[in-house]
Image 1 (cartoon, rainbow, N blue to C red):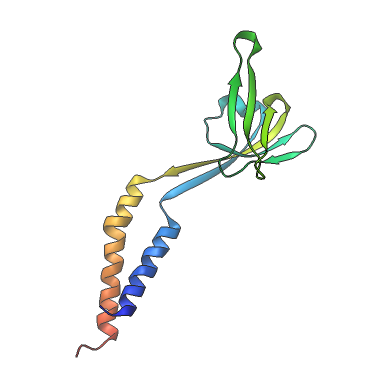
Image 2: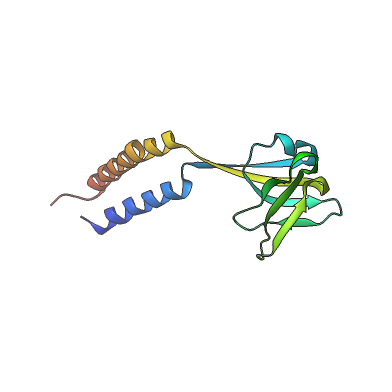
Amino acid sequence: MDRRLIAGITLLAYCFWIVGCATTTKQTLIRDELPEWNGGKIVEVMVENGDVIRFDEVGGRLVSQGAGPEIRTMILGYTWDKRPVEIDARKVLKLETEKSETNAVGTLLLVFVGLPAAALGFLILYFIFVPIH
């Protein structure tokens, strides 16, 4: 095969890989919305005194500790500089969350329809612009 064709197909596959088939949704929550929150990772928290705590790539998580009337809701995790942090949820003003979901149908369509169609398009263009000897 011609090197240009291989390079073109590789470049096209790389473009599909960059776009991906996952969606990431970001959400801002206030303290009152924490009990209804459905999960994800906590990216950043603003506490009552105005400090903003940014978490590492793993993110923070909401944890309930204790039993009975002594239940405390905490946000646990590591900051971007790898220091452990524990924040009482009652002191949170707002928090930024991030949730990633993969799209299996979109991935299958991309792999079994998109890539072969793009490869066929490149082959057609190749045979149009390169004369056959």
